[in-house]
Image (cartoon, rainbow, N blue to C red):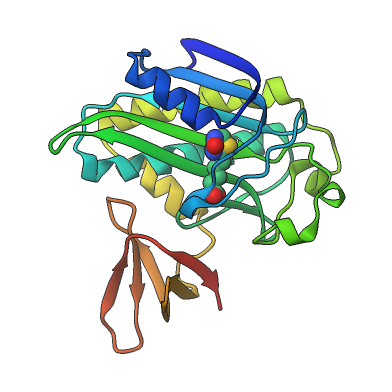
Length: 246
Ligand code: BTN
């Protein structure tokens, strides 16, 4: 990871650039970083606020020889890599919230968006999109633009974070985790994900469009789906949706 790094001043979305480069044959480990994004993409078609100079916006091209069903396991990698990088560059304690949120003191500090190009049987490539709020002053953002309570590392830790050092640490962690993933499968990374998870054993409300239900989080399966035990004892496998602690 990071064998080739493309740095851009401003682009619509690093995921979009990395996806296009991957389609044109970019090597595995290619990283696209932008100082600002004019159309940063969030999950579920939302916008990811991406002002210039303060945060990290990057996308990584991976080409694992896995089935499309297994590609969601790669989310474990970026989540754990970001959590490790935060711990290494600050004295903060990040928490993980399924499926791809990283929280500090209950507020979202990073978001991850994987996009995939696959055929029926195999993955051609996956783009791991990673956005981390580093030195963003939350007072500079209108509250109405924030869907969830959001924060940044400087707001929580009180100290400016060196963007280059943070990026280097993140890519190093990602590289190491990807090696483990390729050699040993998703088990070890998922175990670390679960250990760090803020929702294991907790009661949650799951929202899937119109449908809502509550239950207790049992864990995640090997495909990254959340396992939620309902009041009647059945376990629901949640592949997508929003989850909130109740
Ligand atoms: C989320 O909704 O939580 C996911 C946000 C993902 C944002 C990152 S920033 C870098 C990459 N490029 C994008 O357009 N999105 C991802």
